[in-house]
Image 1 (cartoon, rainbow over the protein chains, first blue to last red):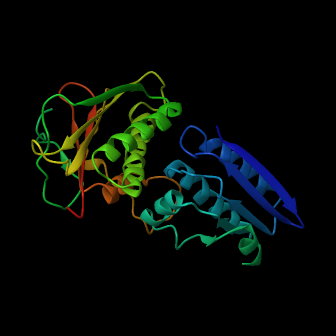
Image 2 (image 1 turned 120 degrees about the horizontal axis):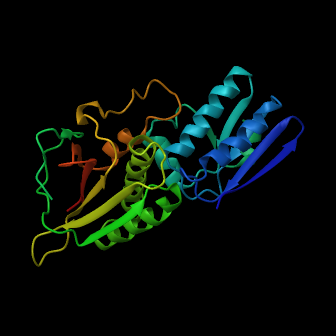
Length: 110
Length: 164
């Protein structure tokens, strides 16, 4: 089961999913991220420190978020990637497309 | 299992590996429902571990199978939840020796497509979706799609130890 926690602070939003992100739940993550982007925040941080696994449906959700964020000038940052999650970004060569930081603090400072 | 059919498409450039044949020692049937993906990943990871792969390789092979199953669910069965999918696994080994790899086969009864048309998208064209085939190709040493004899598709994937 995927749980998603969203926190807002001074024009910035941090979305923190917990659990594996695969085809069974990537739409749930998509719903939360789209909702977070609706208010056109200054920045959106997707904190993946509690996501041990992600497949390409989860990656697709984040790529879509990046496209929306770029159009409305929201800074999108991913942080806290575990090894398996980082691996799929590297295989898909998306680790150079996204801004990726170690944790939320570094994401806020980026 | 039949040998690669004439209409199979080799998805990798490496030389073919001697494929195990005969009944699969591991074979599970699941329905085309995303909720069963995690169970399939766990199975593949556990069997791969028994075949001597390290945790990173096991995780990557589980990802490759996940991507293959997602493609069947989404494109083969158009997200219908009543389609059958079979995951079969064979250790690649000589008698009395430790496994040198694993063969994984995904079969379905979904619509057939020309194996030549199953391709990865251009990675420079960054957009949502279309990464499954690329991920499978990157993780496995050798893979190909073929039409099953009467109905459905078959994806054959082989992975060997790199340091043996």
